[in-house]
Length: 72
Image 1 (tube, one colour):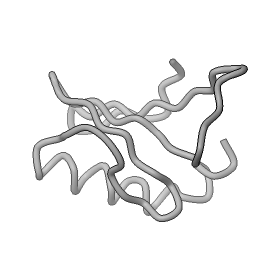
Image 2 (spheres, helix red, strand yellow):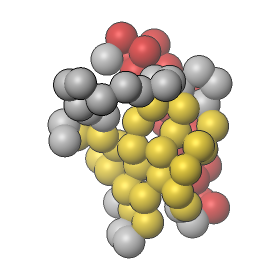
Image 3 (cartoon, helix red, strand yellow):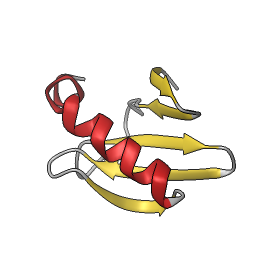
Image 4 (cartoon, helix red, strand yellow):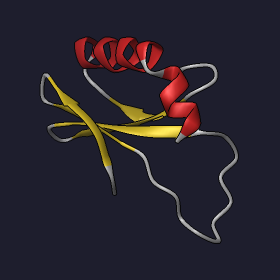
């Protein structure tokens, strides 16, 4: 799975699975043993869990990079 960014121990990844329907654009955020899936427009957690601090970092990062995420 391609890694888009790594900061404060958080890893952001995005990938395509050919032949598998995706209902909305999203990315995956990983921190230690936690994982979450975030929708891009609007930016919101749609599955999983992250500690509150890391959740805020991931959401802030996504706001800053929303255009790039939508392109990908």
